[in-house]
Figure 1 (cartoon, rainbow, N blue to C red):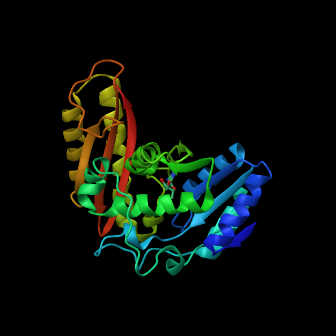
Figure 2 (cartoon, protein in one colour; figure 1 turned 30 degrees about the vertical axis):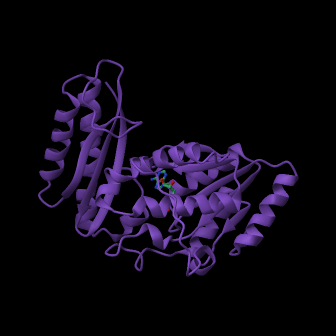
Figure 3 (cartoon, rainbow, N blue to C red; figure 1 turned 45 degrees about the vertical axis):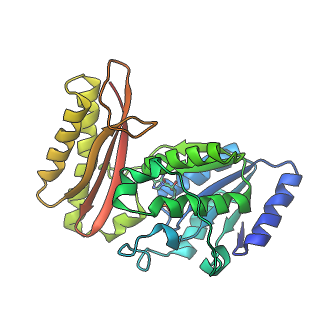
Length: 283
Ligand code: AMP
């Protein structure tokens, strides 16, 4: 496995692989890898001939009061996990190599980026879409792998790829969870033992939503209220949103009938740690 911090050398190595007729798979990450990330690399390994993982804590997707400076950085362990999962190349750029001091271009998906995560984290998705565009330019993948964990993110990237004619197939991979259902996240390591126990209620709320939808026991707006009530009953969780939305537009689901698909989405703060999760629903 090759570890390469230079964008130009990464581009050249991948061009070379492409010239050899290899199918390129790319897995963008911010490092602090866990089995969720590993599942993406393994999927890429199974479907592609040349697997590139990228590790870059992207400053432009963090708000001024967010955790950029304290975001976990565990490069040695990350590289070991990439190697074990079968990556061929890991791109590990420095900030100065990704952003010129006088850079002035951003990529913005105008509507999908303004709701839910976008409403609570202004500018976040501009950072994501800009860096992912740059990573796609550098790695020119045939396929790119994202987690359903960041449901809105994969939707926005799919929109961007269509709108900008980027010749990449976006693959969305299932959420990998802890044994009590908590979605794996690099941020889970911030949780105290007490907060860690409370955090498991997020998945419980999503499962409640799934059951209410499956058995047609409640309309989407009522399901959203039931999720919020479940989370607020913990007494300590600060719910930012709990919603049942259209999985294509993210608009709150209003009309439904048997067979309608939805997605239950939650963002909540447990202590100082902000967690997100989601579950696809079938009415
Ligand atoms: P991050 O390093 O948090 O930017 O995540 C990199 C990629 O891994 C994103 O596409 C995430 O959606 C995905 N990911 C993060 N956590 C999980 C998880 N628990 N299961 C599956 N994919 C995940």
